[in-house]
Image (cartoon, rainbow, N blue to C red; front, side):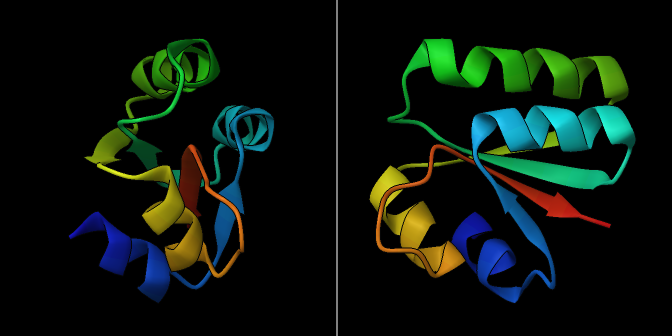
Length: 82
């Protein structure tokens, strides 16, 4: 479900730090988080998304999320931008 959203998104931001920055700047419409990501990596993103009222979706695998983004490594957090 969310893997397809990521694949079809015109612009995405990959990574925790970049996602938090993008949320603060107001360009994110949805965040996708891998369930197998470490809590300390995703907690700042979840908190910032809650503050700004941004929808958070979860997927099972970092590896599959990375593939959906077109990268060769796993991705813990992906932001879909406006």
